[in-house]
Length: 128
Image 1 (cartoon, rainbow, N blue to C red):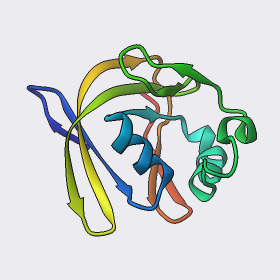
Image 2: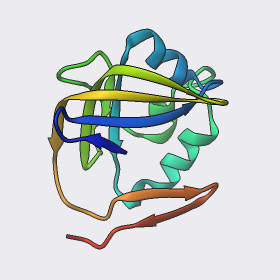
Image 3: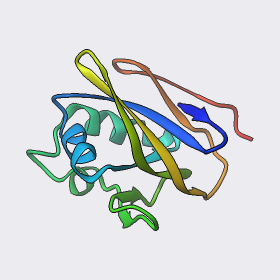
């Protein structure tokens, strides 16, 4: 979620048992990928399988590219991306809230964006 316009800050919440949590804690960076609704199946696969055990990019057909400002991959098929460096970590029970400064924002195209609601439920936006 966006948490500040000046400076531009974005927050994400990650479970402490997740590989993503370990990677973000070590690298102090993350990329937020805003993906189209059409990738719902791939997003579900990624959420159900750990990167500790397999290559999610290979398994889903998603393509990665090097981010411009942080040492993390971006998803090529993303509609937009935010590259962030971690400024603060907040303990939130079994999760951590990572607040990152947006170092680079990339907006590729407008399309119906995927929003996760709960478990296997998703919604989208109107096409702009």
